[in-house]
Image (cartoon, rainbow, N blue to C red):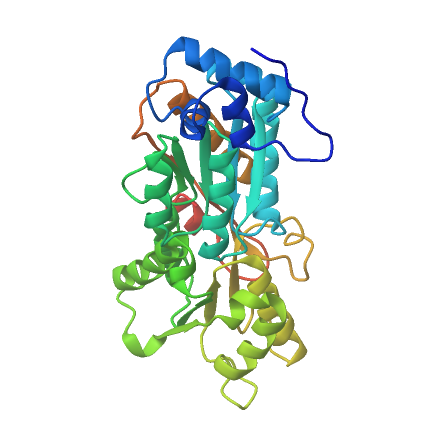
Length: 356
């Protein structure tokens, strides 16, 4: 076979590889993607052409022989969020121990971004993908399945894929009961639109379930769910508090507000205090996620704590197990706990009663 040198100025294409190996371009594609039965002799010719022409880095070509890339894709909703960043850091730490590399994609809460980035992960022959957060993307997951790429869902559960999630509904319903037993009677929920992420639906379901368990009448239930609270959490929360949660005379409408994340809760606390409403004496406020600044906020924020590191570790380990032939429908549920601080008044004995 005649040796051929690739030009440093022209990008080598799949056509060049096919011509060098004496095959058609579709055969090269099948060898790269494992999408058809190719004879070992032909496969060897293609892999040799790939190495000679530097169509992919030499390390990747060697992995092609082994049908391994040791690449794992991670699709996040918002990498700037402390929650997602810490979860990813724990996955990366675990992956390094096993000599896997992570390719991290930020969806920015947009499924069009997810589609484009998943395509990039497939092209790079990742051995599995972890989707952390998100939802309403069944068509994207089905596209990944066409390539026989294992999928693990983090902080969500679609009933079809192996997943790691928190016990959102159970925790929130128990918290509502604890708040009710502590003397709170008028309840509000505030957060982003529920369709953005599946875990938001479970949190709100837990809120409603807890109210029903305690017999709270409809007139004492308030829900504020707007896209503004998703786009600009703290500033939007400040404005929303004045619009929805005060009676116009400087008095709070609910006794307690459960929010979908700590930044919204902190916006509410700031708005309440700056408008003369005492927290927690006149109004209780609860956050979600327990980000690092929440315990230093004044007053320190009561919030639902989710272990970000545990989520990342379990997501990685579950995906690794599936990649290596483990059970594909495993479902891991992680416990949450309440950080009972100074924006609510819940006696410790009531916390213990509800195992919070």
